[in-house]
Amino acid sequence: MKLENMYQEIILDHYKHPHGKGLADNFDAEVHHVNPTCGDEITVRVTRSEDGKLSVSYDSMGCSISQASASIMYDQINDHDFEFGEAAVDHLIAMLQRSVDADEDILGDGIALAGVAQYPARVKCALLAWMAWKDAAIQAGFSNSTSVNDSNESNKE
Ligand code: ZN
Image 1 (tube, rainbow, N blue to C red):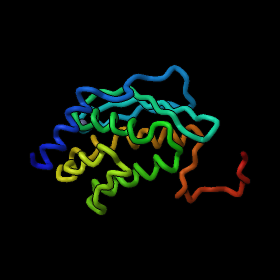
Image 2: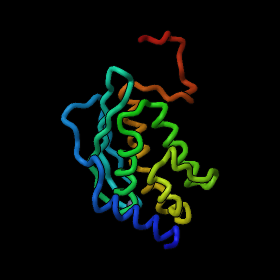
Image 3: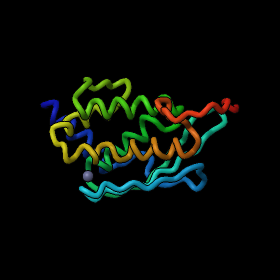
């Protein structure tokens, strides 16, 4: 089987059987992101746990790429800390810009989205869930490590 076909199978499988879909009742932050060029929509909720990990839940609708990507996002970054998730988001972006080779250790089934880089109009479909997660995490109080707006406030534990 060609690699491209195998990737198609992975995407279709996540699309038909999404992992972790359904919103949690309790959450620290919620965002709703829309990809108007395709009509994809996602709501993401994140909850901080005491050990610094973030649980994620989501509900979404849209094309097969956006739905599969949301399912993969859940698999890869649910119950991890912010730095882990942010690194995965950054790697996915770089992969879709073709500036890095896909790393399965970081993206899991997300490497199946590598082919989307050939279709610039669909890149937003693949990124929607991951960008929504990052937005929700930041709203839940996790700081963006690359932020240049840091004030001199001391870090409170
Ligand atoms: Zn889409």
